[in-house]
Image 1 (cartoon, rainbow, N blue to C red):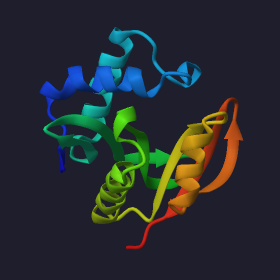
Image 2: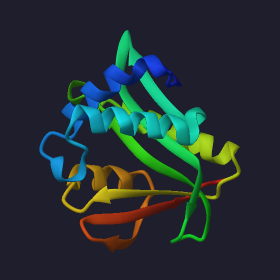
Image 3: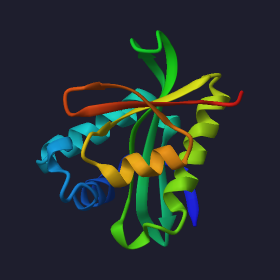
Image 4: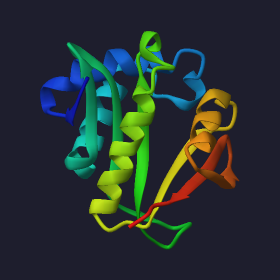
Length: 153
């Protein structure tokens, strides 16, 4: 298993795995390939050093940690986890946890003391995963739940 920074050539893999990962959770996702491609470009432009891909011979998952994010909730720059998803057949093997740890490590390297994220209110598997990994719910906004974790600097 290799974790590396995303490059522009990863866009097609990102689109395909994103679509698969959000099956059943479309209310929280971009639904057209064009929107997903634009989302990839936005993530890449926000903080390309925190945009990671995990490979086992080919890409199987992505995470996007944005250390330039200024959170109005925490009122400081945070390591905002915009995205974390893994191909279905590779779930439950610790790969998402590995990507999350790499994202947290990146946030610490950038001097961020908090990692934040938004997760869909009905995305129970993701909520359970984040709670298991030390995140706590801090609020709600529409169909989203805000979760944060204090990073150890």
